[in-house]
Image (cartoon, rainbow, N blue to C red; front, side, top):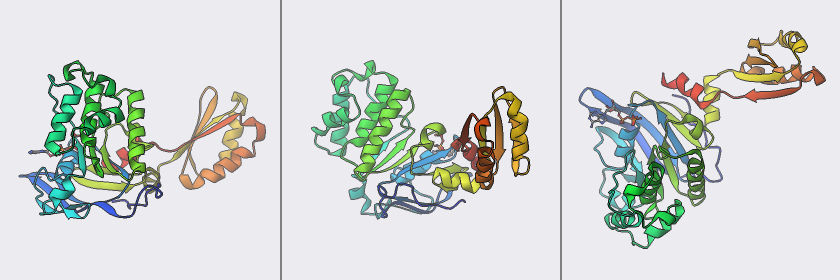
Length: 316
Ligand SMILES: Nc1ncnc2c1ncn2[C@@H]1O[C@H](COP(=O)(O)OP(=O)(O)OP(=O)(O)O)[C@@H](O)[C@H]1O
């Protein structure tokens, strides 16, 4: 497994561990849904959990919430063992947005939150405040049956926020949200992080998660294959960087010649540019060689490997 490197956002992330998992397993007969997981998530961190369908993410979430028993190992949330006597008090400070929230079509958004507030023993006055926070105040009195998919998702998020949780588990929270709503959703998460809330989030949309989490873990076949910042995982994989060099077609050969002595893995000419792939440790040498071409280089872009590239390297 790749190293768990420090979060980039140490200013927000405290050092106290909010989630600690040690050798956690969940076996359903011969199915090893979770197969020996160690994990530390710090207070105030926005932590991503990614993996193929069936990798074990939801099972891990459910164990962290105490919803299903652990076959072996230990999970501690905010210092309390999930299946220990003192977890009940901690559980109140945990919010959960399940993958499929069950909502009652005949209730209004506000009634829905009153219902969840009663279950959580939270003052009903919080209902309107969380609806406002997720941008649903205008639809508070409309029945859930009239809600769009994105509105239902936001209502699910709102119920997770009841009780002012210190830690949030969000299982594919952006399913059904349009790009603007996704942006708004992450703005709320940033705000919560600035308030010290710890968040663990799963998503299949890697492009969405890669710029937004402090650290992430890649799960496959019930195990964590890699854990760290996106940049640390890129470096651990040592995937090539790619340069897009815009030059006039008559200068393509000059670019080739300038880079010929460097450890570049490919140079391909397109219609208006040359694409160069090289090892990370050759990056500065390539930049230097291109700089020497002066004004023949009309523009230059450097592309890091995407989280998708990293993911397929670790999860396959
Ligand atoms: N109650 C159960 N009984 C038997 N097998 C189960 C049970 N719950 C989950 N599994 C199995 O455990 C494995 C992990 O499932 P899990 O739902 O945790 O994956 P996931 O990573 O959340 O997948 P997805 O991205 O599709 O939500 C799968 O093989 C699944 O079939």
